Length: 255
Image 1 (tube, rainbow, N blue to C red):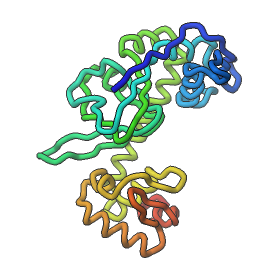
Image 2: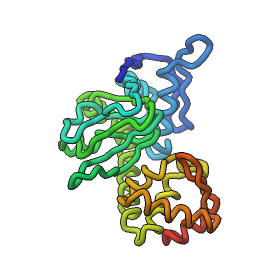
Image 3: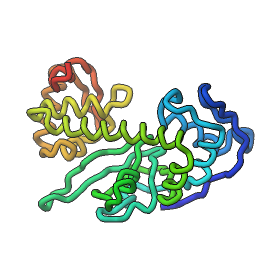
């Protein structure tokens, strides 16, 4: 894992309270600097600006505390029982959360860009309850836990936007529970495919899908083959294309 400090204390900015948020930070080599690009991305990630319009320094102060952490495929990001010394935001790539239960590794969730690790454990003052591993080359933006705590204390509008982000992720955890309780295996796979799709394609192998629903790869393959025969999906190496989203939602009980 490689780390790069990206924080810049006082870049010029174009943040205007109560208007659509944009960042026109310093330019390097004819393009917007790394800190400026991260600032605009983080502002979008924190949710709609009308919830709590950010002042000109809110994002600048947050970006000043960020560090770039680069993880290779298979690198450990967090270990079960570890104290959340840094809060991590997935910028690119994906991170797998898992635990070993009764001798079997169970995949709890796969985090994609915009999702966060460690802040809930920080706020609850508990150890990290899972192992986190990079599924592919991933870029993480991280902030020291103490620094984040102090920043949110000092900037209530930023705190409100972070609360919105946290609430959205907690809602996602509930949907994850729904996936596991959706009924039979076919319904579980259908809802998982709908929720994991990006532009109509699920970039997960059948082995990964099997881990997420807690069944064998053979059982999952059998269901996917049936869905393909029915014209609802198309199977390709390492991914599943959704052809009939409404049909999958009907199987999952979402329509």
